Image (cartoon, rainbow, N blue to C red; front, side):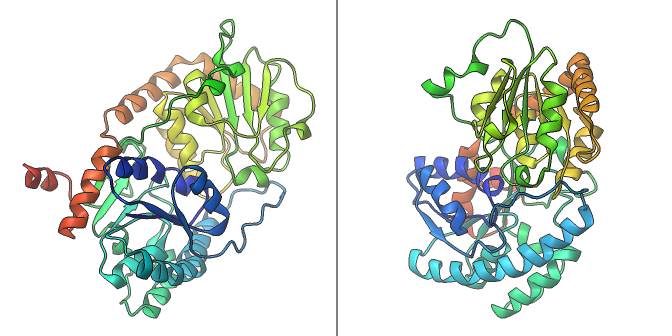
Length: 395
């Protein structure tokens, strides 16, 4: 099984539990990512191949700008659907000739890998990494992607049927999906397991009793942390004087010392695994990235969300509609507004109750082992796998 992803950590992380479960069943597994992500794959213990380039990915500190959802969706078409798909398709085609996978498992933005699978007649599964389903728009992606498809001798695909042709795996609970964008008939929901804390992580400050003060986690992820301007400073100014334990992660490319000395109730780190931290938290403040939202809901945690770009405004709006989060404008939020929003969400048990219902919805989903069973059937049957029909065939 060749696992492929065209983006960063948020595109890689949903694939890791699936690959581990596949290895546990003695399947051969490898990854194909852009060069900057190969070390992270190898650190997770998997063989990794380079596909595509790192063009446009040099970390750069940028001022915070107003979210422009329309432009970001157009960028998916020209970037992931055009340049990135073209680069990756060329490299993955060569890789498949050497490594000879039986099927590809592609995160939903890796259009180039799916083009190669179709050209070679290989079945492929699509793993969703955007929570609401409203971000990847066929009318914006199909045009640039059809040019790539034509270069590989494939007809146009104006509806992006390629994405859901065989099997779609979604780690998001059904309620989080925008009802205006229903899943394809080949979609299966699953729950991604998280690792247990190690001995060093178990000794971290947030894992010890904190005298009844709630623990709040603040993150801006691993990409938009670099485009956040003074948002870290404003958030700290608003939160550090509250009667809370505040855990802040700034990302591997930022230095926590830049934020200066903090009171004893504030802990600033570059990175902490969310699976280690979230069980000790009462609320999450984030940029509304799909992974951050899913992590919070998997632990039944309410949120305060400040979307910056990409699919984050869509995720934030959906969480607000479900009553599990308050949403603030990242550019205009003052320390006082942040302090008031966090205080309200912590004080209102309704937010946590609704988040807990989402947690139960996620916990009831089948785990990665079920997904591997589906992948095995896909490799064998090379035909669409729809919920219900696969179980009948299995019996």
